[in-house]
Length: 175
Length: 269
Image 1 (cartoon, chains in turn red, brown):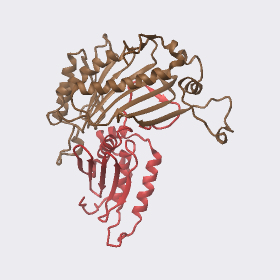
Image 2 (tube, each protein chain N blue to C red):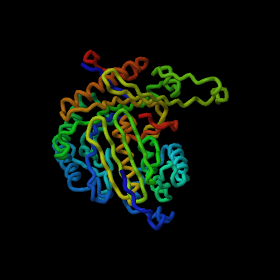
Image 3 (tube, rainbow over the protein chains, first blue to last red):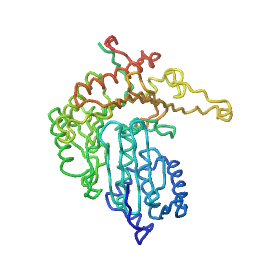
Image 4 (cartoon, one colour):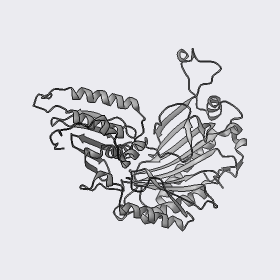
């Protein structure tokens, strides 16, 4: 369970979003921009969750804050190029969960206003854990996308060839 | 003796191994520091030292120094000296090893000996905490590209259907408005589990290789069962995958067998 801190007194402005350090700029190259339709579906779902009122579960659940929504969207940008779209659910403490499940195991990411918590529980093998502040969200989310993809969807994960190959039709690889 | 082809359309062979993320998360370290540090650097340097003895004397860092290393992404590439045979390179990353072979391709026997040396080197230098970890994924991928010399000038759609035997029936309601002078550019992909528990993934279609239009056939056999960190076991799994892909290739290319200029026979398979 992620214990989240109160909403910070600021919301990152567009200018702040774009002011990336060297590592973050490099991370954007790896993030890429494939599966835009998956990203759009998730954005729509996040917007629905953001609009839910306080007490949406009938037991006094906290609403999703704009900071949490922003963090969840940022995480998607790093995850979606590498992993399939997750199941998205709200939590009563105001955080958002992303989940993936296959016959190889379960992955769960919980995102709040200041921190994220991630684990993969594999059917066989050691669990994978990651706990981080949201300051380096893009780098963290790329790692998470790669970990989800390689551990739970190994047939989707392909290493690029060193030979320059381009397909005539714009269809993403099935494995 | 195993059959080989003088005019093989192979443009790249990728033998790949993956294992648990090589950079466990340190709870109190800033996230940007993950994937950096002496253990991982030592791993890359030690591997370079091992493969140096096999003639791989050049190491190229693919990710700028000081930036985080992401899991399962190639970080270093090792190749032979420019003057020597440069057709196989090794790539190493956090939780990743690959051997990429490009033309001139001689035979699996030749390539597998080099891949075997890479695997043995990897097993020697993996960090202490993961030395005995099994490999979680093993895959062998063959990318073949058929140019005009093998398609006899047929367009790619016809070659894929009439020669390789992959056919798609497009409903009339779709083709009704197609320009009859513009051939369809097909792309067929499928994945299936094989009876030994491995998976075959296949992607066939039109594309460009080094900017030249080709009919591309990209086949991968992936073993997702836990694989013991033993070079004999790993190489046996690679060889099984190769034999399966080879049988498919020989079967599919029967109509252009003469153009491929086969050498030897296939009794060993």
